Image 1 (cartoon, rainbow, N blue to C red):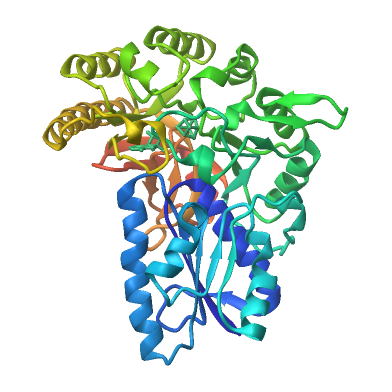
Image 2 (image 1 turned 135 degrees about the vertical axis):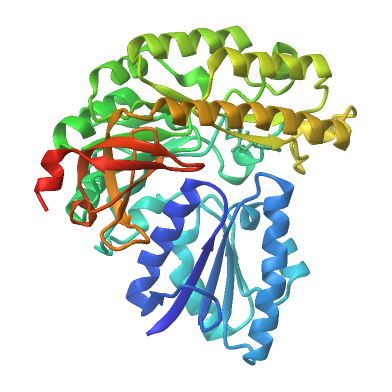
Length: 446
Ligand code: 5AD
Ligand code: SF4
C-alpha cells in the first residue's frame, strides 16, 4: 500500500473534496495515514479566502520540502484547492519541491497527472475549468462514512462581493442535477450517514435540473431528499440572504428533518458598507428576512459571518454592525478582519482601514458574539434535545454527538447509541460543549 496524507484547510467544501480525492486515489493503491512523515504522497487542499490562510500553505510547504529532502525526494507533494487555482505556476516558482498543482475543478484528473509525472518526471499543473462534469468523473469507492456527512450540491459564485476571491477560484455557479444528488444521498445513508449537510458556496442559489427536466430550487431538493430517503437530519450551508426565497423559508416550517439552525452571513450592519461590498441587500432587508425565518420556525438559531475593516468602514458603520448583532442575537458567528485579496475590487480601493482600527473593532465584535454564544448555550440548560451521536468520547462508555444547533454534547453510557439520534436532557453547560444525560428509555436500552 502507498501512503497518502491529505491536509485540509478552509471550508467544508474542501473537506468534502478531500474525501473525494482520497476515494479517487484508493484504486491506485493509496491508503490514508494521519501525518506526512511516512507519506508517499501529500496533498495540501488549500484555502485562499484570507491572506493568513494562504500564507499557512507556504510555511507548510517549507516543512514538507525539508522532509522530502531528508528522504531523498521520495515524496510526491501536491497542492490542491483555491491557492492552487489562484496562484498556480507561482507556487512552483516559490517552492520547487511541489510536484503537482490541481485546482478545485480539476481534481478528478489527479490519477492521470500522477501517472504523467511518474512517467515523464517534472511537474503537472491543471487549473482549467474543464467542460466535463467533475462529479461524473469521480468514482464511488464505497467507503464507510460517519453519521454526519457532507454532500456538495452546488459550486461557485456569481455574486462578486467586493472582498471575495471565491468567484475567481471556484468559478461560476453550477448546480448538480437532482437525481445525481439523490443517488449520492442514498449511498451515504447506506454507508451510515444519518445527517447530510448540503454544501455549496452559494447553496441556496441552487438551481439544478430535476427529474422532470425543470429547474428545481433548494427548497424542492430538500423536500425530495427528506421524503424519498427518510434521512433523520438535513442541513445546508452557506447561504446568501438574497437567495433566501419564501419557498425555502417554508421548507423550514414544513420539513421536520431540516434542522432549526441557519448560517446566514450578513458581513456588515451598515448600508454604506453593504453597498461598498456589493452585497445586493440592505440592513433592513436582512432584518426582515430574519423575522420571516423566525416566524416560519420559531426555534431556529442563527449564525453569521462578519468582516470588520472593509475599505470605507467608519466607526459609525461599525457601530451599525454592533447594533445589528444586538438586534438579531446570534447563537454562533465567525468574524474576520478584512484581508485584501489580490484581484478583488476591494483590494484596489484607495481608502483602506488602519490595522489598529481593525484590531479594536474585531475585539469588540468578538466579545459581544462570544457573550451571545454563551447566553444561547446557557438557555439550553435543562432542555431536552435530540442528539445525533457521532463518536466515542474520551471516557469509557461516553459518546459525543451534536445538538440540532451543532453544539457538541457529551453523554455518559451512550456508546451504544453512536450512529443514532436520541433524546438527551442538558445537564450542564461547558465552555464549548454541553453535558447531557440520557432520558430513561434510552438508558434502559443498554
Ligand atoms: N477578508 C476577510 N474575510 C473574508 N471573508 C471572505 N473574504 C474575506 C476577506 N477578503 C469571510 C466572509 C465569508 C467567510 C467565509 O470569510 O465573512 O463569509
Ligand atoms: Fe464570496 Fe460573496 Fe460569493 Fe459568498 S456570496 S462566496 S462572500 S462573493
